[in-house]
Length: 148
Image (cartoon, rainbow, N blue to C red):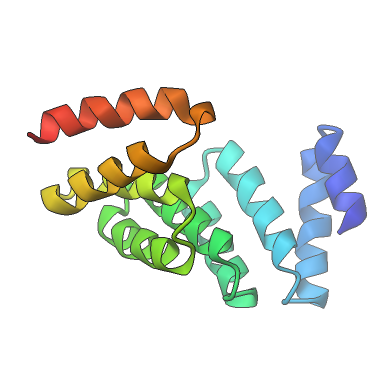
């Protein structure tokens, strides 16, 4: 796993992937190998495969709310909006301090027509997000205006 991470960082992704798969085969609980592989697949625009690796990461470590959020975000990226909405709700419940979950949930809820939920999530995001989320705050305000 460590060698795979080093190779991936060095831009030698094609060498890292088989090592990550081997690490997962030897230790299915090595959730970070699933996360790393999901990131690689996402970078390759293989969104369905990336979602599956994120599911495996959650299965390997279901107590980590960041993994649930990353799965919800990946589902949204893959166009699976209904499942993304459900998963992002779970992420929000698991970690109410994750403002990114509020932001993505607001966007997804708006896209599936859950206007009240979108409005609530985006309003909470605007109230709680730190200044480093300035671009997302502008986008959230724009989306709120569209929901009115």
